[in-house]
Length: 83
Image (cartoon, rainbow, N blue to C red):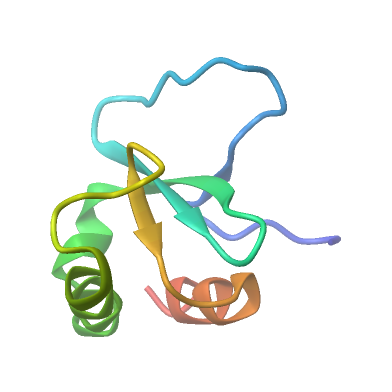
C-alpha cells in the first residue's frame, strides 16, 4: 500500500514485540496481522463496537496473547482512518 495512516504503526517483520508507551498491539484479519495503535483509539465509539464483538467471541481469553480484532484488515484500516 502506498499510504500511511497517522497513529497506526504496522509492526515490523522482526520478532521484536516492543510496544511504545501509549500504544497497544492488536491482531487483525484472517492472517492476524499485528498493528500497534494509540490507546486513545479505545475511547472511540466505532472501536468500542469492535471490542464488544471481541468480548462476545473470546471473553478476556485471547488466543494470540494480545487483543484480537474480529474484522478484515480493510475494515480495521477504514475504521481507524477516521480517528
